[in-house]
Length: 115
Image 1 (cartoon, rainbow, N blue to C red):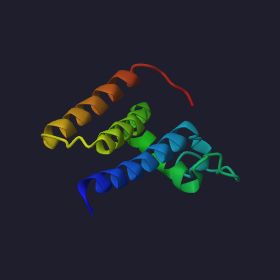
Image 2 (cartoon, rainbow, N blue to C red; image 1 turned 90 degrees about the vertical axis):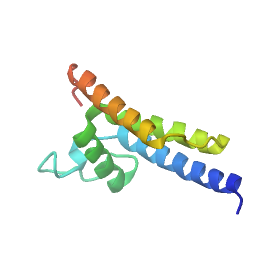
Image 3 (spheres, rainbow, N blue to C red; image 1 turned 45 degrees about the vertical axis):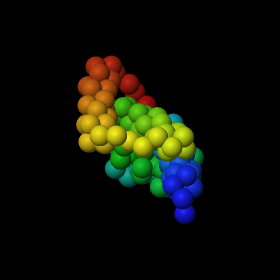
Image 4 (cartoon, rainbow, N blue to C red; image 1 turned 45 degrees about the horizontal axis):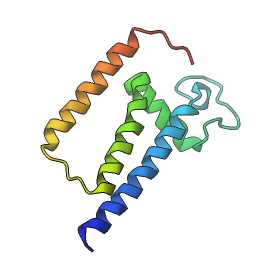
């Protein structure tokens, strides 16, 4: 297969991951996971099901509200793959993403969010 078709397959896969992440995060309910409550919701309220509930729970546990950056980053990566842009200096871009996540986590921790 040529490089253009491989980039299109990667872009479609990343778009699916982006949609799954976004749906999981916006419909997160702490009552869906046993780690947050002793009585779990009988019908799971997360739109992505059990997998989405645990995925969003893990993202919120690890990253907090800055977890909403992940779908945006996946979307940008998918668009770049679709257009055909090859990442240059990948280590530099990944370190920038790490700094973005840490700084946004620190900034968002200054505010009080209740869910």
